[in-house]
Image (cartoon, rainbow, N blue to C red; front, side, top):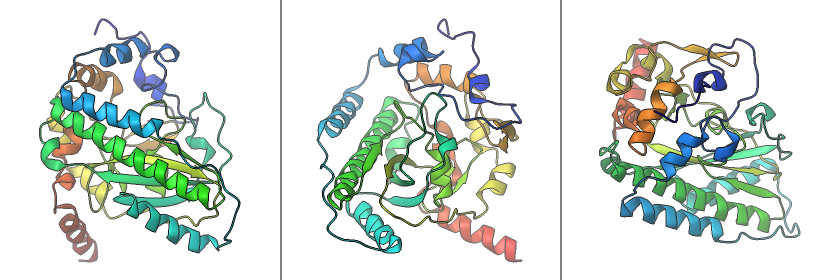
Length: 307
């Protein structure tokens, strides 16, 4: 708490602002460039269990593994065909979710120039739910890091495949050193709806998954967003709200940079998150995240809408 800056993370995020602006990074950037950098440094300096250290080491190996160079184009396909091939290639390389949408420059953090690649491929990987039940213990934190590594590996190997087809492709892991927010494109390409806990609720995996992304100039086709009733469900459910130890989950939506949506109170969340070297309580207790439950909830909500 002694390292909490004078600047509010909620203000940086744009909570309460009714006019649009591009997002500003709050955390997981170069520490010396953000207001909460000293807190982030403290987080990285604490004692970590072997499972966490192993996950970090595996992720570094993934970063250090080179990707293929961009080859000469040998095959010309229609965008619909490339989109199908990309999805199959992602699933073959370990993705549990894959989606495509046109990249919106407004998703870029305001300190970076928007990328020129027109398409973003989103990748999702399911976490081991039994390990996540240990939240906020580091056992769960190790699983989070493990999944970030796995979806990063999928993104990088898929980038190599795209480059071999003759197109540019750049992978983006999460959450560190990101240049754009990943939840909006994941929502846009059909991964689900934004939940009260500030994470996506997917119709198969609930919120028990992690993201990576690829920007590319390969001609693709955008998928549709997916609305199945999770937003209305969250309006009446208080499970994550009650389970949040620091009380960071709001009961109601707020305006964030011109959009009324669910948003977690960063200033309440981050000290607890730091002290426990991670958290994920809210997404783990979410009813949608329990294995086998999400599909039943989707069907139940559909029956209510059609009644």
